[in-house]
Amino acid sequence: MWKWLHPYAKTQNAYQLCERLLPWFVISAFISFTVGMIWGLAFAPSDYQQGDSFRIIYIHVPSAILSMGAYSAMAISAFIGLVWQVRTAFMAMIALAPIGAVVTFIALFTGAAWGKPMWGTWWVWDARLTSELILLFLYLGVISLYASFEDKQQAGKAAGVMALVGVINLPIIHFSVEWWNTLHQGASITKFDKPSVAPEMLWPLLISILGLALVMGAIFIRRLQNEILRRELHRPWVQSLVTQTKRK
Image 1 (cartoon, rainbow, N blue to C red):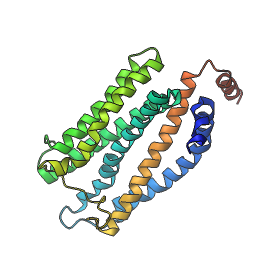
Image 2 (cartoon, one colour):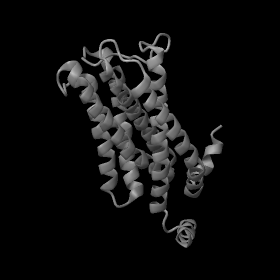
Image 3 (cartoon, helix red, strand yellow):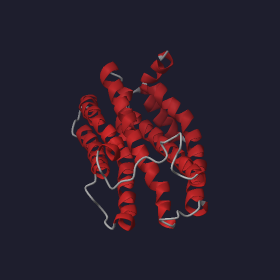
């Protein structure tokens, strides 16, 4: 079933796949992210309680959701690398880590900015906020641990173990509003049977989530290509590619 994935364990094939996918991701990301942001920030109706201040939802919610999504993808890459000893998986893991860290920081920053007018304070040690902050530290920990090893294969294994251990934080983030009495509101868009967000506000939000996911995907693809080139610089195919680029 997964045999079609096996060729992409080879770094050259993975690089070539990234080269084919990148233009599609860039174009799709530009269209969907632009539409979602303009629709949400300029044309979606104001909230009856929060007024226009609620519009930060179109940045905060996508970044919060995708901070966990990126960590899940990073952990899956780590698992593949550890179990099947796929070097490309470790490269994908470390290519994802800084992207996830930035998105997590955006989620925390926009959450604080939203919390100030709603709660009267920038920060509270709320279960959701605290577990999201721990997620940022986990990203930074993976990045730091990977950078501390000269042998990048060993670095990938060590950072991969840390990434897998950190997965336990994801359900804590997701269910924190149900397990504890917190200031953070409960699920809104994940209640598919009856979302508590009006359709005219929900659709631009969903498009914004898709747009940010595609933006992250495009950045990840380019970062993975760069990581492959750094790690495989001694390979003939990389040297040939560099030579061709210099000639252009």
